[in-house]
Length: 352
Ligand code: NAI
Ligand code: MG
Image 1 (cartoon, helix red, strand yellow):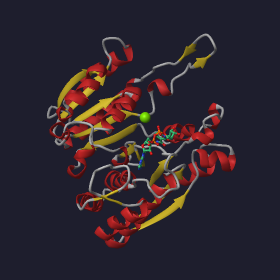
Image 2: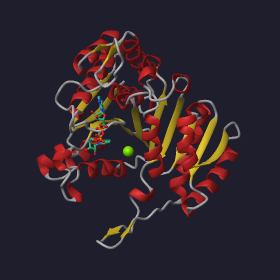
Image 3: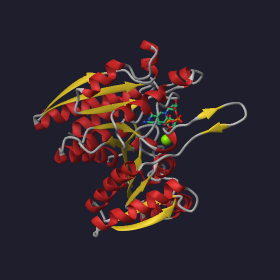
Image 4: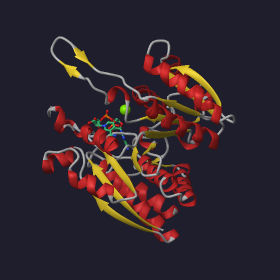
């Protein structure tokens, strides 16, 4: 198969982890006889420095002409004092919105070799295998009016029927392909947007009789994710609740440096990126864990290109390298080899 991928390295450790993931893509292309045409673009702080725009037109055009996007991370102290239209994260919000990438998918699965790094007890963390489906282009982060003065500030939470229906469908379909259990998370005891959300989930469930649905309030879900994370299969929720719950869930497995994500829409086009940020504290030191970005490319191959065998090969290679006791510096486990970003990536390439 021939595919075009736009790579947006971004800031901080972004360039280091995307370089590692690109090497993995090249190895996959060679082993399975595919052609991946890679083109590079600017986003975030790097784009602000180059052309005073966190998401330049050129980047949008490159992405429009590709089959998927691989992103590193954006942001850093250098741009923290910038006015809001020149903030790196503006680029990220804008690219998701521009391409209508409304479904953010974050799998969280226990990795046996890393259980010691989890803040939870081993017996709680070891059977975790859940996916959070977060609505990504609606809700409080996008709706108008929004305003801030010195004396009052307004944000608005709006959801339309169409926005809720499509994300709920995504989640039902995913639950059906897994263990058939869906938790729909809202705050329907307080918010009208949540009441509509709940109503639509009730309507939709008629079409998925094989999926068991439960409505849960976001506050009790936050507790249950820590006390009983293996209770969950698929969780679907609106933008801000999903932002918070997915960061909470991300620590269960032990390291932020391990977690991939996909932001997709119904035609399969998607943006794939690690869950972590630009880690300015370790940027440029060849210390970053590239696993989250490498696993994000596996999600890309599976979700956007239907390359299941290739995706599974990447995942297996990553887990084999960890099981052999090879770690990066973020995974503090006594008695393990600590490798640099490039050394660790070479191990994965050897596996492939
Ligand atoms: P962060 O995820 O960048 O870092 C948190 C901690 O985890 C740091 O100690 C960092 O060194 C470590 N860490 C993160 N990823 C790692 C990796 N792959 N390997 C080894 N260690 C890793 O979050 P933080 O510090 O809150 O934010 C830093 C910058 O990143 C900020 O400018 C923030 O706005 C931005 N950010 C960007 C995101 C994105 O591009 N999607 C997401 C989250 C934050
Ligand atoms: Mg977040």
